[in-house]
Amino acid sequence: MKKIFLIFFNIVLLLSLQYGFANSLSNNQKYTLKVIPKIKYIKTFENLAGDPFRIVKSTTDLGFVTVGVISGSGTISGGFIQNCNVIISKWNADGQLKWQRIFGGKGDDIPYFLETLRDGGIVVVGTTTSRDGDLKGLAKGDKDAFIIRYDKTGRLVWKSVFGGKGSDEFKMVVESVDGGFIVVGSSNSIDGDLKGLSKGESDALIVKYDRKGKIQWKKTFGGSNIDYFNFIISMDDKSYVAVGNALSVDKDIRNLKKDTDKYRGDVLITKWDDKGNLLWKKVFGGTGDEMVNTVVRHKTGIIMSINVSVCKGGDIKNLLV
Image 1 (cartoon, rainbow, N blue to C red):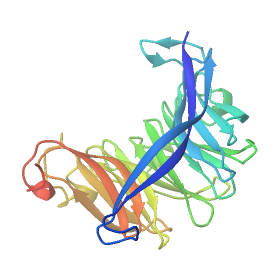
Image 2 (cartoon, rainbow, N blue to C red):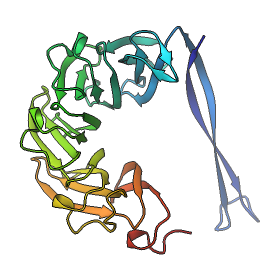
Image 3 (cartoon, rainbow, N blue to C red):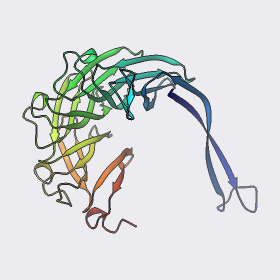
Image 4 (cartoon, rainbow, N blue to C red):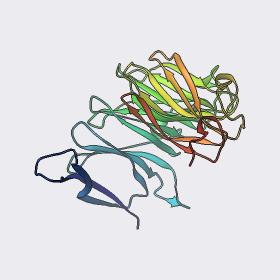
């Protein structure tokens, strides 16, 4: 029987001071910082077929919320969860479950990102193949992007599905300064919500919702090959930096890529204002394959962690050791 563990750590900081000739501090002083995690509690959960704790975020009440998937049919086959539903759990600081919600239908409903909100609520984005249950009457195609918003008590405030007859995904969301949401992902649909927006085999996607779940604007970015966004960062000037990968060499990517091989991707970086206007676009890479792993905000801009394959030239020249 599979057991799922939820472990909460306290972080204890130990500061060790070593100094030379006197007990007073001097220029020769050395600091050693040690971080030792102390387990506060461990909880186990049985009879759960799935992966319910994929994402963990702290909340304003010092508790935390977890999001993952649970099998709607109760089965796992070949290491893959069958008939995934989204499971959202709210916990207090002592690890007590305050509320739990399951979202989805008889298809596969997969969450990719969770954002905690200023009012204590949460928003979850991902992709779904369901046409019934919570998605009844909302499906646009075979695989749609979804966004769902809950208040701090676990009440479903609204739900929305985005896409066409192709494959559409929302990968990340941030709360905008006006209380709405900026979502990024990818799409290869040419109809439905993407009618007139398609640029190639698969496009990077950015969508703005208001606080009530109404679409305010939607944009695609890319060329004739595969391009996508999977990170979005909110900046102090009310702009947004969307980051992903580009394999295209034409249209929006023309003259930007260092490598024209259609099978090798470069890191794609774009900046947008709150009205959906593209402020600038950049591509980072060399003659190999580059892929961004993580993007975090810094006071002077953004910091990215990038996987770099063996390559020569471009932005990677003289950087590999």
